[in-house]
Image 1 (tube, each protein chain N blue to C red):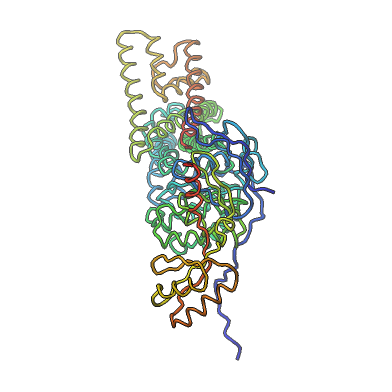
Image 2 (image 1 turned 180 degrees about the horizontal axis):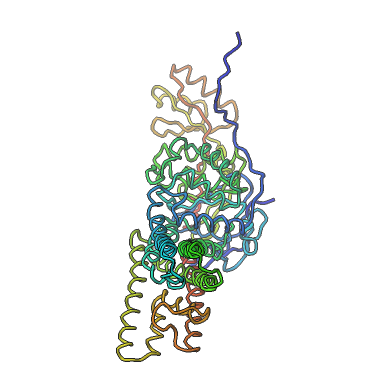
Length: 304
Length: 294
């Protein structure tokens, strides 16, 4: 079963094309949907919820057709909008209970699930207070809770880290990772920040101007390279000279040395040389590709 | 000695999946309807928001109780205030109730952008509007129907014959349903157009009071010129005289204001306007929420 499948999906608003010829298949797990502001991410989410009709093409979510089975999809999908959507005069508990009932849960189950999910997202005593006095971090947690309270098969999270400070971002990303692993709920999370998505996502879909730019799994994107990154406590210049003498290709980048890995013996050679020179080995690790390279590569390709 | 077992410890039992029933859209619509109805009387909301609706409900009920007691005490052979004129006489309380509650029912979801959360759930826009409209109308029906019923109870306690009372009571209850539908429609549309806090209350009360005043003024002028037909049609200007006209013309009650709609054609016009108002309000609300989505 595929989580999301789109085929030639196009959405036009008058002369503006928000999504163009998008064909993509997303598997279960945590998937990042990346694109600049206005790339068509939110439009795509609304089409997937069956709220906006597509101009052309088709799409299915949890094997349900978005054009014909909208209500069935919305029963099984949770949606966290980008914007603020919390009335200030009710408490988080009342609000989430209400939203659970609006997803079709009977009153008793709605109360149980609301209490459970608020605890899981990390809201404790404050959940009995009116939401008007909440911090941005708490508000984002409530928004997340209402999207998960009916135990959806898929959660669509639109920019969940928006407006959060670095610590809040880390908490939110950790929570998203747990939703995908511990809770077993597939997640599609949008962001315009690639760096934060590569930490939690199994796969990344990059769209730009409504078109599919790239669809990869995080593992393949951030695969190991044939480079070893070395940092020593001492003068790297001496080490560079000695390593070059042994026939290893070394590039120096400030205090860091990048060493080409020929085979496993390279590790031993580096270790021995460092020990001979009496230097402290601070770091020796295989370098990984970074997600941002997708964009730089694409940009290069576009300009050739 | 065995280790002390901690009592009342919270165990993190991890995430639990939900495999209970998922009740469909009609259950959700019913829940939203009941929640709207309760919310209109401040139930399930803060203590402060209960004051206004219950104050107005007491205000609506009080005259009915007084009339009942007075009738019994002095042994009148008919009620000093008729059933069908009750709502028209008490219209200020009804208007203020609608003005205070329609924004809470309608514009809250728009102002705080809660609406997208509803629409990302199984409920359709039409069903959402049906629940909200129905909830508001039911609240108004309670507000007007309760005093009318107490009036009947008072009359029966004063030992007035049921046969004399029942026809007019039923007419007035039919009227109460129409008042509820028309006023809820007008109130919610005005509230949906003015999502800003405070503005909605003023707008709803303002529109209804101005229409009522305008109707009175135009009717007085028409009376000066002695044009009875025109005078009758002025009832179309205010929702209260409009519904009163239908209750008089279609259900056969005495008109509370002036002579009611002029002739058979007048009655048809009044009835059609009521239907158009209700259907139009519903359509306008659905259209409003289509826009609210994006």
